[in-house]
Amino acid sequence: MKSVTSRLDHIDDVSLDSAVVRFDSPRRSLRGWGEALRIHVPAPWVNNLGVVSAALAEMTIEDSIGQPASGPVAFSALPFDRSAAGTFVVPAAMVASSPDGDRWRTVIDDALIGDPPTSGEPRRIDLHVELDPDVWCDAVERATKRITAGDLTKAVLARRLVAIADVEFDAVGIARRLATAHPQALRFCIDGFVGASPELLVSRFNDVVRAQPMAGTTPRTGDPTRDQRQAAELLASAKNRVEHQITIDFVVDSLLAFCSYLDSEPEPSVVAAGSVQHLATMVEGRLSHPAPSALDLVAALHPTPAVGGWPRAQALSLIAELEPTGRGRYAGPVGWVDCHGNGAWAVGIRSASIDRFTAEVWAGVGVVADSDPRSELEETRAKFAATLGSITRL
Image 1 (cartoon, one colour):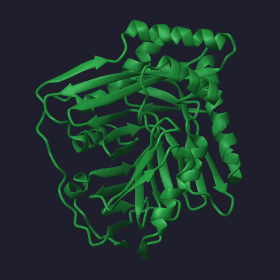
Image 2: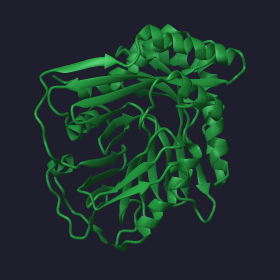
Image 3: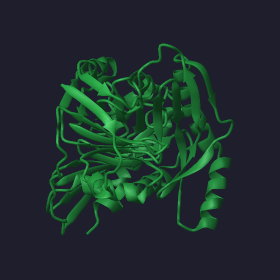
Image 4: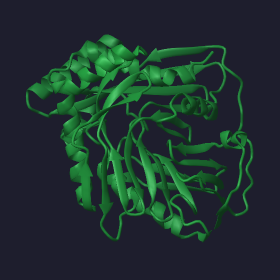
């Protein structure tokens, strides 16, 4: 296969909206059409990501841009389960932009940009949760007892909501609505997995590495005075600050092994994310040489305590015990990697997995010793709202 990248003076927004693959941040945009290559990563995906770099290296590459995300780029929404297999997709054509406004197009084997398939608007959507709310609250109570007993410090438990429509869901359209509703988020549409995540798992641009872990949540009401008061309460909450610090310590310790320099903000800030707001801390550093691929960093970090718990092994064991079905791609890494190892990866939350007539939406909460099951239930409802509005538009 031959990949050719060249500068692009103009492409209209309508064309960009037709992309079937996308990963956008407030400063960088990647949109793809078609499928040049599908890369299977054997189980466990966390140990076999080298097959992706090898597949990209086999291509003949003509690249006059030299920017991160130029040349062939592989996209994936990886499973939450580190022991599962994964899949990457290399679009046949891609348009990308950089923070300084540059745009370029990458085409593999003279591919053409076409329009995505479309479907009609649903007239009926049925919603149901996997577990009765009382049953889910009982699971939270069981988790708090295990934590109080000293088996672990924190576990993240999630609820699943299933939406079934009378026509096939339009994943591209849902992704477009999510992107419009959450312009400051990391917005993605990859193989039917769509979302607008507030949380950067990790990015690697040349030798600069960044992560912005989030843990600790409170609802947003739309009333600025009330939301500001709740943000102050979140910052002052001992429970949420402890939960947040567990995640920060894990991310810093995991990245230190790859870095010549690493630093984090001394205090968390509060970041708005649709119907909720989170404690967040930026971590940034310089990678040692030779710089690891973004995929190496993903494998080291996933899952952080923000979506799994701590200690990792005990938390994942409890999740498997208390959640009746696997999470699929919910809370897994979602993002891209280029042929030079650059990439950006979000935590796959505020997301939905679309499969024809069915959309699965998840919402999770961090459970610690003094967690109140009913309060945690309300938090999942607030998080569902961030995604459901873009799916159930009737």
